[in-house]
Length: 376
Ligand SMILES: C[S@@+](CC[C@H](N)C(=O)[O-])C[C@H]1O[C@@H](n2cnc3c(N)ncnc32)[C@H](O)[C@@H]1O
Picture 1 (cartoon, rainbow, N blue to C red):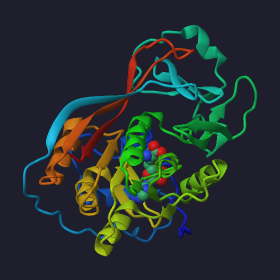
Picture 2: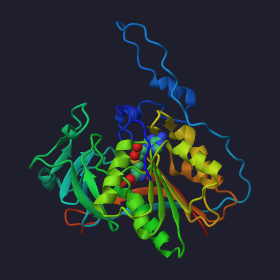
Picture 3: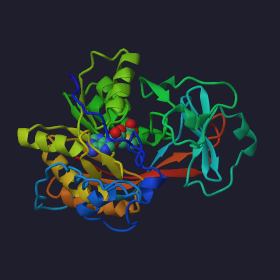
């Protein structure tokens, strides 16, 4: 399927792939949900003393919303806390962490990036100097200039292979590398569910980024719909599909605001068996539609429930860079899934350090919260 898309707004205060950066962390009060009006106010540029008077900025458009449904029935069973761990492989592993940074192996490269959760000291201080790439973030420019390559200049991308899928690792301007390895825990679960379903499975991947989850689902046999607001990310996802010679797999690549898309699917009566949703704390649709997790997540899950098929397998939510406990998304998921049976399991996604050779189990680095509803 083709993609129709308008250029995304500049991403200086949020990342080009939606993961929050420090500036974004300070845009909203640290506790509690904020009214949509605040989201609009935050967008207003600060007036400069010498600047000529400007027109009032137009309010940021929001996806039209329907009211939340009143859910009846028993809440699903619960399993808490569940810690899903990515242990690492020859293609990816967390080698060491500490002093606010992490050292990871991505395919052929060792990469150092900031990691606020790594409060402890490094276990293997001697090997950090041998890294191939370091994210410095010391320029405001987009692109590779925010990376340093101490050994030799490297290209922007490199080949990677995870869960049977080929894709490109990529040095992005916002310190990310084209894949979030903690998601492997969800992707292996989904792969196994698709492979053992014994029937055609439809997967919806919301906030799908570079498409690795979509490729994993499609290569396991699912029919996939991938939605992301960033034209650039959809382009990378399509490149990944070509790299793996997976062009024939049934994937619809859709560049659209996730909320708008699911509400349209609800009106159309479309249904999916598995929905993955990994929303940022703050993001924008292709037409500037505002996404604020604390304001919009309840409705997002509510609509997702409506577009789950009668034989649905699961609804998987990940949340990161937010000040909340997994209980807040756990209880929301259980309320949303009242009357659906099954189990809601929630907790954290962590990555376990495994040393330079992948043999030494070290400390667990927390990356995100998750909650998933799994059918009975
Ligand atoms: C961190 S990424 C998700 C990563 C993905 N789950 C993975 O592991 O590959 C967040 C994505 O949300 C997208 N995004 C942000 N706001 C959006 C919106 N309103 N609608 C759709 N996608 C949005 C960004 O373009 C970005 O690709």
